[in-house]
Length: 123
Image 1 (cartoon, one colour):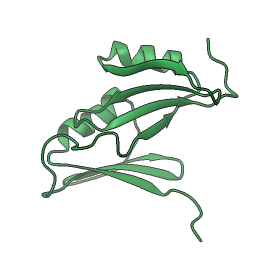
Image 2 (image 1 turned 30 degrees about the horizontal axis):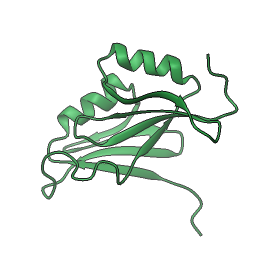
Image 3 (image 1 turned 90 degrees about the horizontal axis):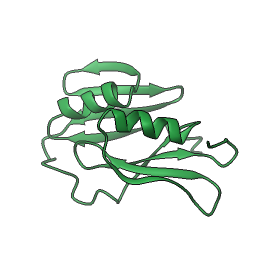
């Protein structure tokens, strides 16, 4: 049986700009670095960036897969990323289920969301 999500790989034609974004803008902790492949680690889940010869340019359908990035304080995280020049597609907003989201994209056009669960306080 499947017991959870082990990881996600984002393929790109050139990983340098993506690795810089995920490491230096989003502050993701690096797990391992290989030629043309970098893995970031969050306890039991890995997000990897890899170079792939079949990928060219921006994501063709950037809304097909959306990564939800957990945060305990969406307003603070949003302000921090805005200071780092991240342009948001959707500002922090409460959803009908009580959770908060804010949407932005990475340098390849992949859509990402900050997600704060409803049981966490929002200022």
